[in-house]
Image 1 (spheres, one colour):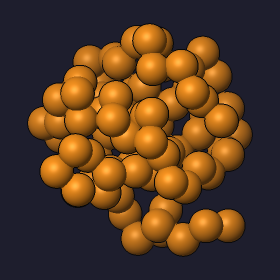
Image 2 (cartoon, helix red, strand yellow):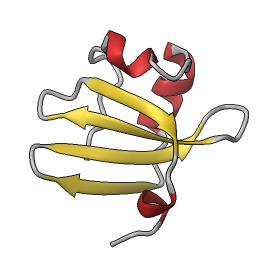
Image 3 (spheres, rainbow, N blue to C red):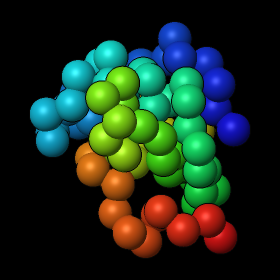
Length: 76
């Protein structure tokens, strides 16, 4: 699991309007992690409580952030 919040938040992660602070909070406080081919999807809450999914590449950089979709809210 990714735990180092000092990695890069890529420009593509801001596509849906989430801030670095919101993304970093999810990154540091993930409640579900899906291990996919070459990347991870982390699910967690923003400081205001909105559930997000963030995509993290093998280098630990965040490349994707959006409102959590139902398919990722289930563990498994």
